[in-house]
Amino acid sequence: MDKKIAVMGSGYVGLVAGTCLADLGAQVTLFDVDEEKVAQLRRGKIPIYEPGLEDILSPAVESGNLNFTTNEAEALTGQDGIIIAVGTPKRADGSCDIQYVLSAAEMIGANIESDTVVINKSTVPVGTGELVYKQVNSALEERSDTEAKVEVVSNPEFLREGSAVGDFMEPDRVIVGSEDGSACDFTAELYSSLDCPVLKTGLRTAEMIKYASNAFLATKISFINEISNVCEMVGADVVEVAEGMGLDHRINRDFLGAGIGYGGSCFPKDTEALVEIAGQAGYQSQILNSVIGVNHAQRKRFARKIVSTLPEEEDLQVGALGVAFKPETDDMREAPSIDIIHDLQAEGIEVSAYDPIAMENARQVIRDVDWAESPEEALRGMDALILFTEWDEFLELDYKKVKEWLKRPVIFDGRNCLPMEELIEMGFDYYGVGRGIDRLDEILSYRYLFAEPKEKD
Ligand SMILES: NC(=O)c1ccc[n+]([C@@H]2O[C@H](COP(=O)([O-])OP(=O)(O)OC[C@H]3O[C@@H](n4cnc5c(N)ncnc54)[C@H](O)[C@@H]3O)[C@@H](O)[C@H]2O)c1
Image 1 (cartoon, rainbow, N blue to C red):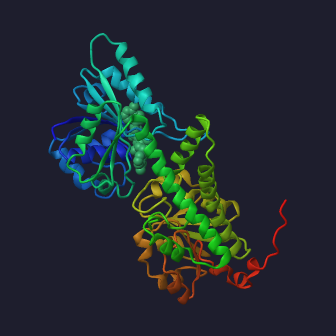
Image 2 (image 1 turned 90 degrees about the horizontal axis):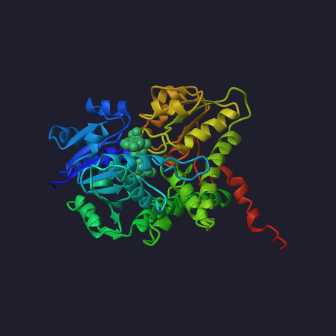
Image 3 (image 1 turned 90 degrees about the vertical axis):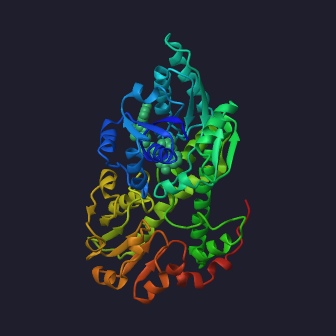
């Protein structure tokens, strides 16, 4: 591939996309306004934890295909395409803040000197691509030194933190949306060596595909979490329920793991943004509001389960394994552990915690935790083990030893990932999510089957 590409934003998406495109043969300049981040990258230090990234980043730098800069003009002139991959955080009202995208667009208009394809990878409300086009053009109009033109393409990114490199290199699909056919073709060519379908759509449709996809996945998670709550009440096991459901190819097993709800930088922000987008357009989303509500309640429910299960004693202490919203990432944005730990602390329970890589970021967002250097240090003398993140390291622990470390052999498994039967056999009190065993006596009374029919209003 002989294309020259600038990537604006060297965060999770920009850094991975830029490095992967350089690996595929493009000449990539990664540009970020964060000087410290760029300085780190220049020193060969990757500012995020992302498995496999280092393996392709160093060779890409050495081959001359990848370089980093904070200089706008150096980054943005002479490129065939410019990818926007800046943050689109949530505003206080849940809507999506596109200020960084628009300021990137302004920089493009202020710097390009020849026709350029502007490719937006940031997740943005439907219609933002047209605003980007306007913003670039209004900056271009202020200049008399260029006749450069742009076309805007929406090329949403679907990579997941923790498996981002593999997701980028082996995507299920690539979406390119634009009103300009040749800009669509240009963007599609960036991915021509990958073995995946490329769907070409209009600009707005591509922007909507990203939100609809994330909202659907969040819906699957909240759906199975709601089913897990019913399972708990009626004595069914949600792990087996999900397995039975998932064998139906129309349903599929993915994203049917019940637990403490979704977190991270995308699902919470994107579901809320879609509710706002729909609302602004005059449509009140019923499903998505429920999805968000169930997700929020799931964290509260787990904290309540811990508080109501542990004895009413003063000086209770629990040890948490994992705090990131999922394994293989140090991203703490909207991790369920934050709310749950703060709820436990509000009940007077002290928390110690260990995470293989997310503790540095976690210290910024979780108060008053005793951070430990190992699982043993986090669990020794504790009244219970709470598992928030299903890191392999925790699945591989010797639970005979764990039982010796703990003061009480109690486990709250927020991810249903530990071997329940084995742990119960070893003498643990095990509480998962949606597995019913903690209320067996009540369930076996069959009361819910014989309840009097309610009078209708
Ligand atoms: N993180 C994910 O897993 C993921 C997956 C798919 C899509 N997305 C979307 O991709 C976008 C980026 O997400 P992220 O997680 O990489 O964000 P991030 O916060 O990790 O990185 C954003 C970067 O953009 C830089 N930046 C801000 N303004 C800039 C400008 N004008 N020019 C150059 N750089 C600028 C920031 O300094 C920061 O380094 C968001 O819209 C997000 O919703 C994220």
